[in-house]
Length: 253
Image (cartoon, rainbow, N blue to C red; front, top):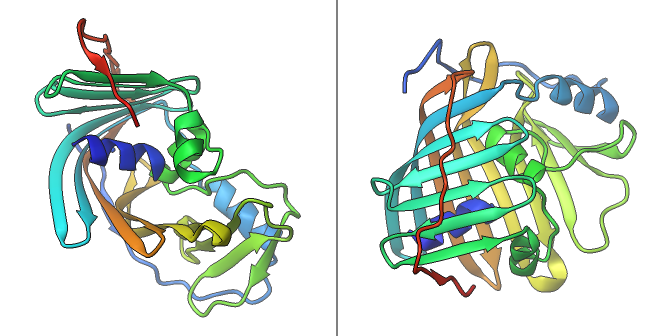
């Protein structure tokens, strides 16, 4: 379970209302410029107060796999909260902290986002992780910062000037302008993070991911995290309880 929660952070997860699985039917408009595509995508960014969902998570490493269902709660721009194993494992992410405890092995973690930078070599923030979950572009870009690239089925965008530590690519769905695929690669470190949005659903006029596959390839070793969001509800009053149990040992990553 620890590996699943770490993968969720890195790649880093009760009542359904008006849910409809979306399908892509629109063709590409060859006249759309990169800044117009980005503007259309930003217009579809998720806008809600709270989100609650059951999430089936499957972790695949080589020929080994394990799966669990967790409870996910979010307060937009403020908190990501996950509960698993009948309150035995709990994770809370805020813009300042990453906190987790595991009653199964009596361990805990309390730190900042430097953990993610140490693991991936990419400096990610709370907003990046939230965007990943919601099917929005990982990073914010200025209107003229991206260029359009050829692709037969999606609007493919990439920065005009790539970051010195990593390369970044997006593929945006032409029907509803959410992300189909986003990729962060570090060729010098033989590391690639791919996030595939396999299905979206419409809930209360919000377009949100239904199935996500996160794939991390490092030195030809592949780890895949699959997430299936079920029973999603929005804008309900939620609590985010979290208190470290006493006597636990810190996790050494």
